[in-house]
Image (cartoon, rainbow, N blue to C red; front, top):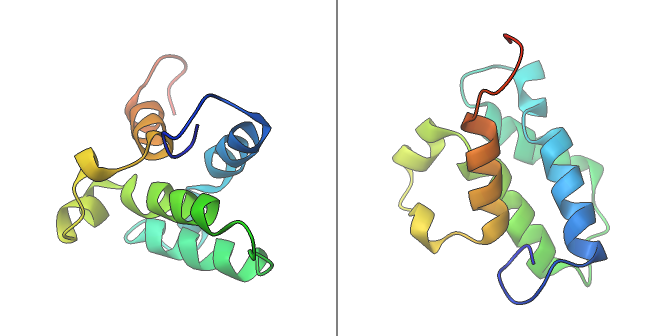
Length: 100
């Protein structure tokens, strides 16, 4: 699951798709600090988070800390992250196909 508490389920699939598609949306504002801009944009778009606090925490953790400068600047350690963050970091750093 997104937070390591169980197996893959529909909620985990949905949050993985959401984060996979939107984690770099902050690049529309600036490449530098884009992870924080992405988090701010997502917070503005998704205001009805009541009842989804743990999922939202996992999503924000993944969006903010997938970027090395944000990870290095904070006191957050990757080993304390949840599986959603680890998956995003791994996928975001891989280059498998066509040139970007």
